[in-house]
Length: 584
Picture: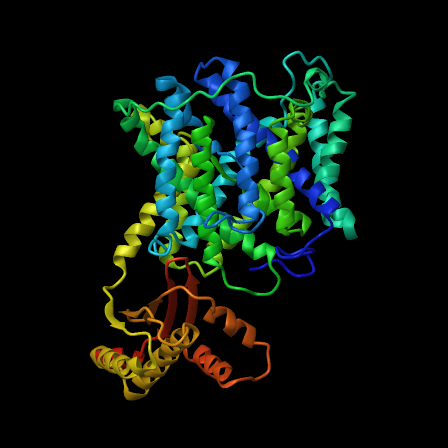
């Protein structure tokens, strides 16, 4: 599922020239700055709030977006993925933020954002325990629904013109079509380095065409100062915690968790297109991305602006340009932070006609939708997961279009579920939770992390095999597989002499088709799944390599998920069908 190497020009750990990184970072900023700055303005206008506070809200949004984008690219402690994940104002909060400001002003909104961000930190810290609920099917559903949710906005942008526009009626359509075809042509047929500049060239071409048509207004740029601070002051926090806070908090928590699911999906997708070779997903990266998302929400609340989240545009741009180096994120984040203090540059970027921006957003959303589908099908789409995806997706579309019992929902429910990403994501999450309850009860044993535990492990597996009615050869295979898994975890965790090693928990779940073994151990560096993939095309090596090769041939599926609190080594074996036939 990773991006083909001939399309990936610079991987995440590689260093493109500084000028190229800066230009690519600037290119992404051009694409997302409208969403970062205009979303808070839309919320303020819709809530009837005085626009005098708009300067501060936009300033805070740009500054927080820049700082957290740099944290995502270059992690600080637990915060950050280490990949190019641009951060910006979350559109998922528009409806519920309008309600909060209407009821209690920006201070109440800020307090609710701070409180809900603490839930996201807890969610990120316990991501390993939630992995059976927060699955790729859930994350992929949310990503596809992001495209569905934003497409109507992009389509409306294609025909937007200024209120006093007196030029030809199809002017917006001409600029949108020109931007679209220039970008697609360069991206598909451009050679060498020219492909990297397809998005920026398309935007420049569309804007130049818009100028003689009367769609490019630069008066705001001429009147804006080069450097300056917002005229409005910090709105503060509402710390009364009255009934208004508790009434709105559940809605903010739901939308925050759905935003975390989006970041969860982004953290997986960005790895698949930013690395060379066929590597398993690093869930340390996913946890870091979600932690940084929570940090963005926390800072947004403290600063008094709308919540912050990862922009999935990052994935589309990396896919389109073939540059996944984290240096791009560092430059882009720095540019965003500087733009907070430069009204003139910000005005220039916002002067780009909506029709031009809409054309390119359509291209990015198509790529984003494809990545969501890839994520959905990465591990195979079972019958149960198909139900989760289908219901989550189409109920999200139905709520987004206000086609599902809109008159029966209370007003507070509209503020939460009228967003398709929110309603579809919550649906997929609930269904995934129900499916997790369907999993057979596990037999479990706790073992010391030592080679001496093999005898006890063999006894556990023998009893398990006999209870399942397996034959002697199948039980021997079960013993061999479990022994190799245990020894791998023990040997990679060996520390200095006398160091106390945490124990290893072994869980076994059986169905008519498979036997699932799960080894839960302390976090460590080596990943069995990655090592086995490396051995597939490599010549025979050490004894340990031979053991891993044998193990890979004996199992039907192997997955090694590493989180910051625990490692989960999951092994599936085909059940002994002869035993079930004997039972029948």
